[in-house]
Image (cartoon, rainbow, N blue to C red; front, side):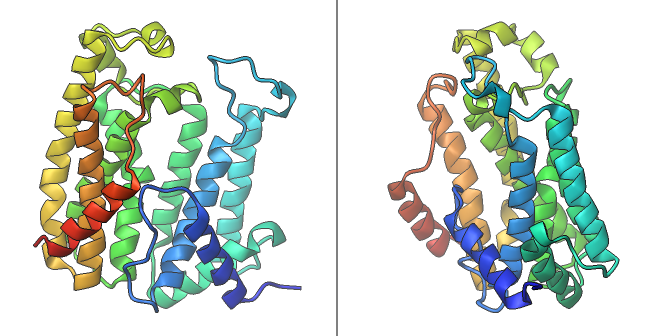
Length: 299
């Protein structure tokens, strides 16, 4: 029996509310838009999980090595997901496995006139996560962010009816900044997937080796490297900060909260002397309350 649009939206909302994230998803948007935000979130979240599924930590001996999916297996799962998107956009019925995502997503695409290209950008970034684990320079990292993070910000603006290119550009600065802040926050986590987003030319310039990273050695050179990355990430957040002043009250509040969340991560990295190898900085409940208050009263 085909799943209804309403049931699909409900399941997307359940996922959005239950999944671990730094920030609540779509809680500050008007109630009539919330299902659409959750459908976009569910599409992205499931694709991201497919790309990450089955990674073995190279620093450990996995007990369940037989269950670890190979790179071609992960890639095929994600490409099958892409084919469901293809079928949905063509007006065909999505496969039963993912109908709960694509039936409501198709309704959202049609009702709000969202460009499919942004969804394909996300999938291309997730596919890249499977096959590319090192980045030669910062330009390559930025290119990845332009497909992994920026489409989400643009979709949020489009969902709220904002189609001005200049606002999308401001959103790109914030989204890239947030993605980079997460990279520097999650260095130890990504090492567990044999991924290093720190640019290779920066590693060489600061005399940091991969062997030191995998050994968890937070040398002075490493701390200087992370300080450099944090400072360049701050520049992006500063460029994107004016975005909130052009938006409706509730969306502005959510954007300010996102901006504050990303910059708070950068501040926490600085507070622990840029050592994100020994300890992953994170936002606690107290931080979230403070962010809500700051975002509400800031202009």
